[in-house]
Image 1: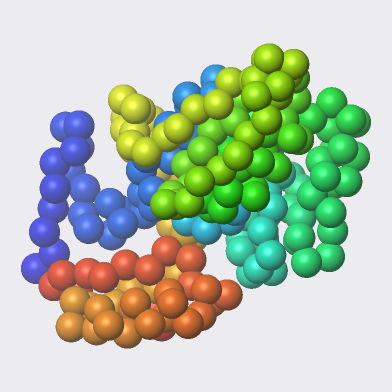
Image 2: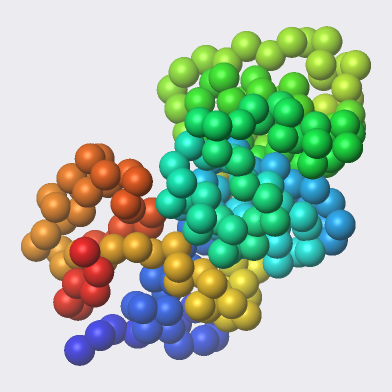
Amino acid sequence: MARRTEVMGRSWSPSSVDAEGDAGAPAGAGETGAAAGDQVLVLGAGPIGQAVTICAAARGAEVMVVDKLANRLELASHLGASRVVDVSHESVEGAVKSWTSGDGPAVVVEATGVPALIRQAADVVAPSGTVVVVGISMEDVALSVLDFTRKELNILGSRNNAGLFAEAVETVRRSPKRVAQLITHRFPFEEAPRAMELLRDHPEKAEKVLVTLGERAEAH
C-alpha cells in the first residue's frame, strides 16, 4: 500500500510528492525578486534548471534556457521557456544580446556549477542585475572585482528553500502535469544501481530519476 504524508496540512501520496521535482527551486527564482515581465536566463537544463524555469514562468517572467542537450531544451520549452539556446550551435552571448535588445537579462540563474558559466553569468547579466548560483561544484571561480562595482551586481548563492517551500507546494498544486514532466524515470529500490547507471551513462535520456520504495517502476 502506498504511504501518504502530511505536508502543510494536506495529504500527499508518493506520486504527488514525487512531482515536486526540486522543491528548493523557488529559492532560485524567489531570492532574485524575479517578477512578471522580467527576463530570466537559466544556464543549465537539468532538474534544478528546469524547476527554476517552471517557478520563474509561474511568476510571469520571460525565460530563456541554455543547454547542450536537445531533449532537455525541448522539455524546457514545454515547461515555460519562451526561448531555448543549444550551445552546440549558437553563441550564448549573441542569443542573449538579441533576446534582451542588448540590455542583458535582469536575472541569471546558474544551475550547472561550471566555473566558466558562473563567469559568463556575470558577464551577460544586466547592470544592477542579479546572478543566482544554484549549481554545485568544488572548483574555484574567478570574477572581476570591477564587475561588482561597475555593474553593481547582486550575486547570491542558493542551496535550500529559503523559506519558500510553501511556494514549491503551491506550484505543484497549480501545475501538477507540468511539474510531473520533470520525472522521466522511476525505479524500484532493488534497481537503484540501474538508476545510477542511467544517470551516469545517458544524460540525454534522463532528467529526474526517482528510486521508489514499495512501488513499481513506471518508466524506463
